[in-house]
Length: 151
Image (tube, rainbow, N blue to C red; front, side, top):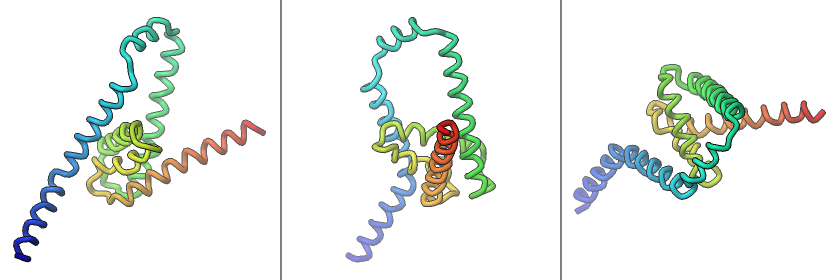
């Protein structure tokens, strides 16, 4: 009986290892879609888009793209310091999955864990630590420039 229980347990562990990340990806996608459906009204979006100033909207889109690019560069530097063999597309996927996960988890905590999904060669603790460092770099930057402007 003990041998049978051990083999059954090992079987379930293998199933979780094989399909666990795929299920986690599906749950993240479903969670994000449910969050967006709950928060967004298409009618309000269309009304807002008809009354915007195109110059300011274009400026916001451009600055948002620059912001995401700079965040990507910061995350890429951290990743390449940890594991130089990480591919650039996996780094970008990791960043975007983290953004998505942070939108619907409390205190954006999902970003710390789910950035790991496309990064199979990096441990979870390393990913969480590097995400924390990434966030602290941003905080120090804001404090520095905020203090400079205040003086």
